[in-house]
Length: 129
Image (cartoon, rainbow, N blue to C red; front, side, top):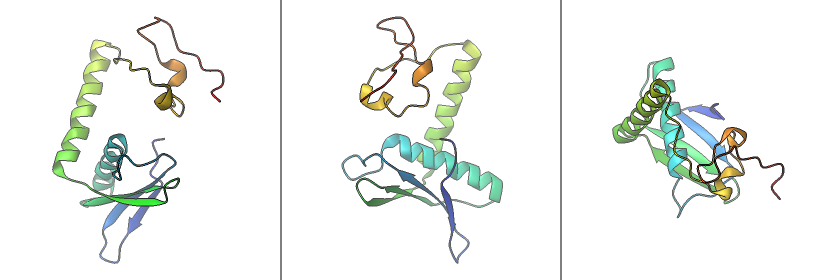
């Protein structure tokens, strides 16, 4: 989490972030959180390398499917909005709303810190089979 798997640089000096995912695409499209992740990486690449990122690549290994994600101004704006929301939550010390979904919890890096509103205590999954 938090590392770009690859940055492809074309012969035209185009920078393309690329990521490999174990999960499946949704209805043949990149999952929303993956599109947001790639847009975030794109913003970091643009700042670091003084370039414009136009697209990203996600390879879903279980499905054997490669998806090209257009990096649009709208997608970048969604990332900026999400970052602003995070800053507001930090400043106000507001906890994020919790949505319990075991399917999504299995691979979550924050699972051990997650608070469930329904039971009012930290969720602990010793082992999920």
